[in-house]
Every structure is written in C-alpha cells, then in structure tokens.
Image 1 (tube, rainbow, N blue to C red):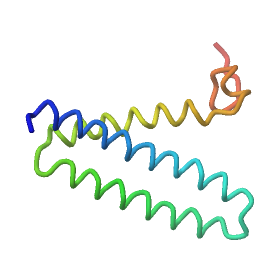
Image 2: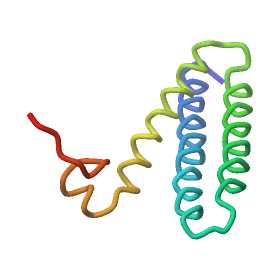
Image 3: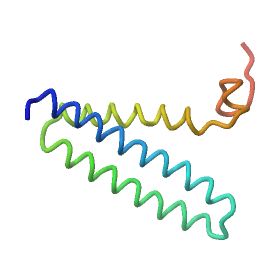
Image 4: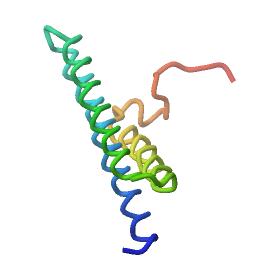
Length: 104
C-alpha cells in the first residue's frame, strides 16, 4: 500500500475514533442526567473511551509520527462534527454552546 493510501486510512481511523470518543461522551452525559449512579457512568465511560482511543492511536501510528498526526487531525475533525450534530436547537440558532451572552 502506498503512503498516500495509508495516510488517508489513518485520517479515517482518527475520524472514527473521534466520533466514538466524543459521541460516547455526549451519550454518557445524557445518560448521567437520569441515572442513579452518574459517577459510575462517568468513570467507566472515561476509562473505556480513553483506552479505546489510545489503543487506536497506538495501532495506527505503528512508529510513524506522520500517521499519528493524521489520526489526530481526524480525531479533532470528529470533535467539530459531533459538536455541531449534538447541539440543541437554541444553541444552533445563537451559535453559542453555553447559552450566555457576552459584552462586545
């Protein structure tokens, strides 16, 4: 496989890892709101998401920093995508994630 194809694959895997990580975070936070044991949900989710992402980065890099960088780029792109897709309707209209307004 040529380097261009490996780089594209590293970017794609980074995207998938990011969607899994940040989508899992979003799901966990929503689940914690109604859970009787939110701490257990948060800690177990953190361990699962982080260990999966770290193993994915390690396997993709395979000793090459360029692959690691492309995987990280895909991971950050996924963060942006998941953040956009999981906004509530009020946040999407104002463009604010916190819902507070600031002085100019």
